Image (cartoon, rainbow, N blue to C red; front, side, top):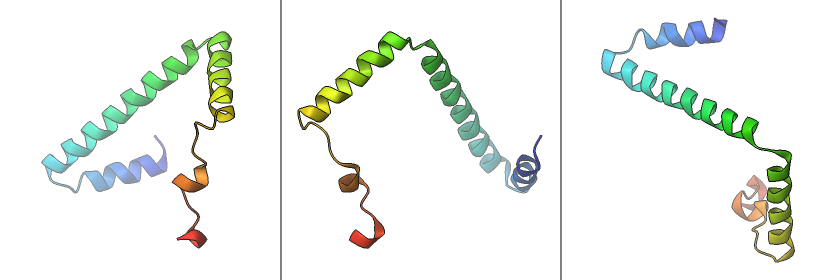
Length: 78
């Protein structure tokens, strides 16, 4: 176990049981979500990646995308 994880667990131990359980549930759900994504990525074939890339290229060419700068403006633009 890493030092950082040990520190986090030590802090968790100081919380009431209800809060510990809530955090543990979120942590376990996050781990399951990561496992699911990892399995999906590993199961994706090169042909599927190629099809997805072509779909993205078509969306960009058709102007069906939004520039990231519009979604995540820089601090200077705020």
